[in-house]
Amino acid sequence: MDDRTIDYRYMTRRKFVEASALGLSAAALLPLLSACGGDDDDDDDAPENTPTASASGSGGSAPEPTDTAAEADPTATAADAAGTEDDDDGDALENPAPESVDVGVYSYAPETGIEREELIVGVQGLPATVDPAAGMGNVGTRVTYTPYDMLIRRDFLNSNEHVPSLALSWERLSDTVLELKLREGVTFHNGDPFTADDVVFTFERLLTSSEDSVLAEAKTYFLTFAGITKIDDFTVQIETTEPDPLIVKRLASWASWIVPKGYIESVGHDEFMTTGMGTGPFKIVSFDPDNELVLERYDGYWGDPVSLQRLVFRVIPEIAARVTALLNDEVQIITNVPPDQVGAINDSSGAEVRSIPLANAHILYYNTHNPVITDKKLRQALNLAIDRQLIIDTIWSGQAVPKHSHQFEEYGPLFNPDRPLLPYDPDGARQLVEESSYDGAVVEYQLAAGYYTNSEQVAQAIVPMWQDVGINAEVRISENFLSGDERMVHTGSNSSILADPDGVLWRAWGAGSSQQVNYWDAPAEFNELGEEARRTLDEEKRYDNYQRMLDIWEEEAPGTVLYDPVEFYGVNTSINWSPYSFYYMDFRAYNLSFEE
Image 1 (cartoon, rainbow, N blue to C red):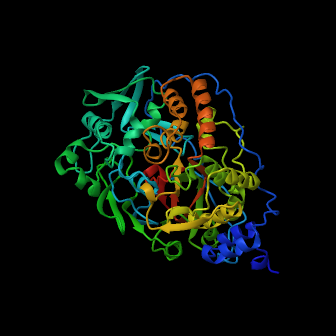
Image 2 (cartoon, rainbow, N blue to C red):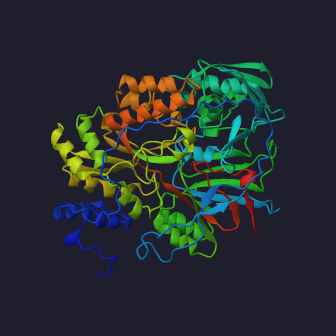
Image 3 (cartoon, rainbow, N blue to C red):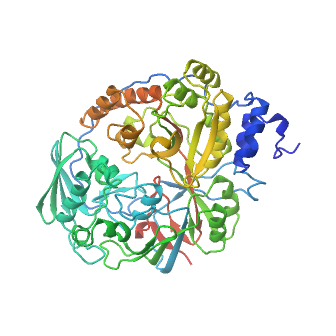
């Protein structure tokens, strides 16, 4: 039998997942898998089927606080961003996914002297707003990174160093006070000068926002801030309630884009949500969230001029249509390319795939208040029943990254490589289902259509795994994310944000997070450890606290991590541009140039 043919009489779980990768529907395959008993004898490459053990260790001595930063040459070193250069052939059905994706290295975009009138990026969706502190999902940060600037920039192409942006330098005056000297001569896109007043306004509008505000999530990034003081027009001081080991990282991360005080006070926040305005190299000229965002080069930009006049983000929801548009040169970059389309793009004459592992975990959120899944033994069973390695091997062609619990390698000394990979243990899952109070009610695996790469195929793979251990599971695909009482098990993602556990484990799951406010009553110990870790400069203490928090998180099971995905972009070969390990798309001069 041809190995691409699915014999429905012997439908093992591995073949089901492979079928999902081929794009066959869950409706057609679920009954077949149930009928064959979910045989998993051929899963030789799954992680060890052992429960995750408690892990501990030492992160070493505390680092010295960041003292100063001076002007840096943003083109000094080569990039470390990853990409792809070749390889597969044929269409999706003949080659469901490439055997491997070669990793190349993209350097900073060389100056070529060539200017383009327009660059169109085909995206699967746009945010509802261009206020950078309100639209912070994947589709939002992708498009707001270019029209706005932060005080400090994380240089993704140079070992993640922190370099000057709107702040020329910064210095710790004490454990709780950071002083920043601001860049002079910068203007917003309407010509208003950038000053310390804009910095104070940017953070005060977040810190004073209410719980039901669209800025409420952004506020959680800066809860250590006690106040922001203007010293003079180009000097500010930020005081924190207690020592904050991450203050520089916070100022170079999500929600820290500087916005114009005068403009927002003049037009109001509602209008700013639809018009936006920053100090970046491109200004927003029109925004239709259902169709496209159009930006034009801002000739008053303080940095190097970009060799592009017009940048367009165009909504093309279907991947097949995005690929076709790329190959026909109707767009020059496309996002969210699934692995099964890599070969077709790389085989074309004018386009290639560039990829990078994301510092972003695909996760499942559990609404622990939902009566169907309120028993943590059932949630633990849901986690143990997922064969993550099989999903990575088949649907992601081995390119996604397995997880040592909910942590990222970019944490450096705060990453624990000795924590076991998340376990796959179907027998243990069956036992937990039996021990739990589960009564056979439907467990919904919920997802928003087309938002995450491969999300539908992964759902089609996981639901039969749950069924195989005695859980009555179904896939529910909606146009938008579900919330409130309707939420049960929902797909999502957690980005590293700060290259520190505070940016994920605390921000997404700690006190005040959406998950704790709405869906999980965390043990007091979890919150106490998190509060302590974000208020000490003792790195060893922080390491120990976060390891214990991971133990609690795995035991309580308010969710689970699946893997770190690889993000694939289709790019016209005439474009010098590098992807980042976040969804940011950076089109500044150091990361964009053109060939003939």
